Image (cartoon, rainbow, N blue to C red; front, side):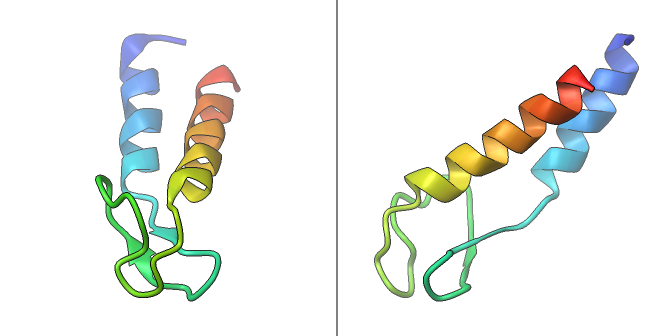
Length: 58
């Protein structure tokens, strides 16, 4: 896979919305907890990162 293909996959992942699994609020990168319910955002962002790595490996 060339660098252009990899960049497209990274950019498409960045545009993917991440939501709080507890209340459904859209999370922004840099949020340490959900701005609505206070849930720790570590797990939703780890799941997002795993999906991005799977896209890059595909």
